[in-house]
Image 1 (cartoon, chains in turn brown, blue):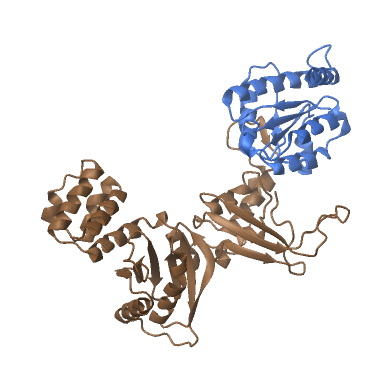
Image 2: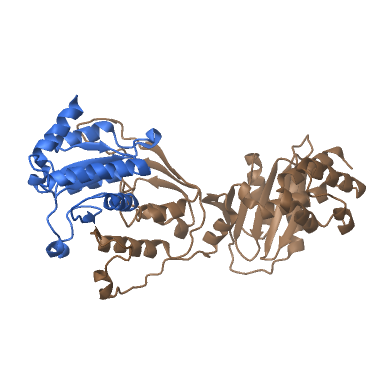
Length: 346
Length: 158
């Protein structure tokens, strides 16, 4: 077995949390059940990985099998990577039957015709998702298994989720190959990025709870009820306002959990409007400014701003439109009074 | 208690109620002023208004400034005070200290810095507010709200 393959398998196993190693190796299916029984999964990971490599040596593992283990790892832990969403367009209306073998063949052929040194692996999952792992090399060097890109393509949809990692220069080639293989016309980036692959899918497949414009008539009796939390000496004066905020929030965000995004970025290319007396910028040039919101869970924190008393409700539509518009990277240009200058309330 | 942080308001109110006292007290929590007029007839006389400002939130300062405009001038004779929280987290301050000092000066009212998230300080603040409340309600003979207010201001200047 190639020493680089052995090292790669060893490092992949080390990434897996100890309690999950056995299950993942089973899913991989490369080592037999008898072989798995010989490994002590209670020792330290260093030793477990050595044992695994030893067994792989016995089975003469090659890079293809090692790559499959990597795909399985990334399928279970996709949130370790950053994913971008791309959408493909067809010119005609015909919905062609998706032929997986044809797709794989065309993809490999297209990619390899431009760059010989690539490792390409496919794996299919239940929800019509095709996972593609590509390890990139250069015209002069073998593929670097640690510099990989991942593509998740749902064949019944025009959406592709790409996690590029380091070598961004290979992206155009990758996109080309996808378009050719899937019989689409072109592909464009949707300006939607996150660590959470499932949340991205939720947004583009519209699987999150959306706000429906329902009218909830508030029963009049509620207003005069004393607060249930005990002490009658504490009086909440702004009950109505609080209820209004809850209602508005529910209308805007819906009831269920929000998709998980970490950033929202707004690139401003608008003119700086200052007090004429201040005379800050003489030239009529757009003021370049980047506003970035970051959070472990951006949409949930936006949802809790108004109830926490940190912002007015309703929030600016620039923030609340993120799931509906399916993007979290925006460019704001000067439009005749369409986007107001100050777009965040606090 | 007027402020935008409900949770903190509630905790402070509960701390105040837990203190031993020999008079009846009712605490009204509001996010801003003016108070909704539909409850006017149910409200007793107000003896003390404490405005809560969170240094980490410009929004809370704006809220308080807007509410101050609705306070009758007679309250500023010692019946108003400012509670400023969040000073411990220096990296997250978005309200400048100058703005706070100016507020206290312009409205001739004391500014108390208190990290209300800490229980010990909450209890201490509750006790101070209760003392102030007693004076403002006229329960302490010989000390008026105005004289107490000027006493606090003078000691702060030193």
